[in-house]
Amino acid sequence: MGAEVQARMFTRADRRVFRKKVRSCVDAMKQMLDRGDFRDAVDKPDPLLGMEIEFNLVAGDMLPAMSNLAVLDAIDDDAVFQTELGQFNVEMNVEPGPLTGDNTFDLEEKLRSSLAVADARIHEHDAEMVMIGMLPTLQLEHLDREWITANPRYELLNEQIFAARGEDIELDVEGVALSGGTVEVLRADTNSVVPEAACTSMQLHLRVSPEEFAPHWNAAQCLAGPQVALAANSPFLAGKALWHESRIPIFEQATDTRTFELKNQGVRPRVWFGERWIHSVLDLFEENSRYFPALLPDVSDADPLAVLAAGGIPELKELQMHNGTVYRWNRPVYDCSDGKPHLRIENRVLPAGPTVLDIMANAAFYYGTVRALVNADRPLWSQMSFHAAEENLHIGAKHGLDAMLYWPGLGWVGADELILRRLLPLADEGLADFGLSSAAREKYLGVIEGRCLNRQTGAAWQRGRVAAGEAAGLGRTAALAEMMRAYIENMRSGNPVHLWD
Image (cartoon, rainbow, N blue to C red):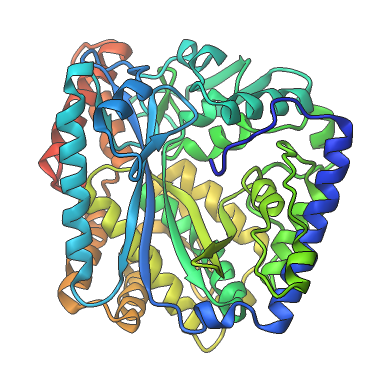
């Protein structure tokens, strides 16, 4: 969720000053790009695999455990584990590791070890961490304002979104029928942004030079639909069978500051795919400053243009704060490390889980395919409309590997066939170009291949298990709880989801 907020109340004057400061930050970035301030830091960035993973906390009865502060206190590792918006969430920051040789094996083992230590420390709190895109046993009463984590930033964010909207948030999702069932619909009003916390994701970071930012971002946008179809793991919320990756529509609705009338006027949503291919990272930051009013107008004392004029590197705090409240599925990130500026793309479309091996495979697929698309002789984004890429995201999220996606040269094609025939070879090519070993490529891309051949994502497994439970006479609540117990057991086994019974 970004930096802590110092101010507790914002005035109209704060908003005017903040808007000017964001504009100054954009102007400062333009000057930094023009004079080459990024080149020393990332002229040839080392390929690194960096990720953040959000977890749900569940109690022994498989209901959410509202105990993140106690859990974090027991884990006692602030450098790795932090709070998230909901009291039933924690986030893990995975230290970046080289995307070369066999180094991903070490990263995978460190991730397993960190989770094992954390898990051992929290059992006394009747809680365990679950990697899943959306906790199936969450009910509407778990999404009320009282379950926001006690943190000024989260509370302020909730207040500002509702002040901008002026009315309750509406959740409205028409699902995909389970085998032998009928289409289910979730329609509900909520008085908080806690439904956003229901959407637990894995975010992947890729550091790029300014010259390569636009092609990498465009490639990531092209890949979003196949990515989410392949990794879908969020089929249930509030007892309803919804999309295979219900995080996508729920997150879009949970932070929507627009009223019905503003939507009809074409006002842009804060959870945003975008509207065009870009030519520079400045395109994205300028759009953010031009289209979106501030939610958290916390103003620093620093003058970014004055810092530049004095030969320094500005932190651009207002730009970072504002950027953190515009939820692009592929978000541009400006940051400073050791006094040197750099740019990253934060890929946000993937759900958490189901296993460590699955998330490593999802990461490898993303990094490799994006790299190959950027290296292609003819850019893929010159062959398809931006709207087609956005449509792919929502079709892939709704239907998972059953989705029919549009792809240049193939037309409308099944997601599994697209990945097997076209994208897996690209992923292997891109990972080899990064320098990842053949053993690592075979391990992680083999998981992706198996998932497509078995047609079993986390969402498909969850849906099938619940449908089988109901066919055996269980009610929906009992079937969800039984499925969650089996999910956790399988998650702990470490076997990738395409091998689950």
